[in-house]
Length: 131
Image (cartoon, rainbow, N blue to C red):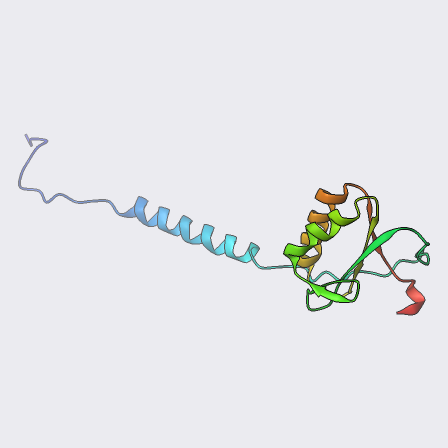
């Protein structure tokens, strides 16, 4: 009768589970890298119901196609924006955003606007026939 602890046999390691795990990790990483690429190029549309700007007390901030910010005809830095918005807290912030402006520049300005103005800001559009 053979003893279960026979020293004559070579010990072996079954590599099948290890290969299965490596294969599953490989599939996981391949699938997740395909989802991490930007999928949408966002183009800000024109509005069919755009109205000419009304006379009101407002601060106008423009975001150009290169992502730069402009206030009263001069270029400003993102760090200057909170102080500018605090100068006139009663004024409505009017955002003029270029159609080709980077979306992250737009979102960062909207974040500051929400923090400093609450709900007192608008995003201007142009009538579709002007395009």
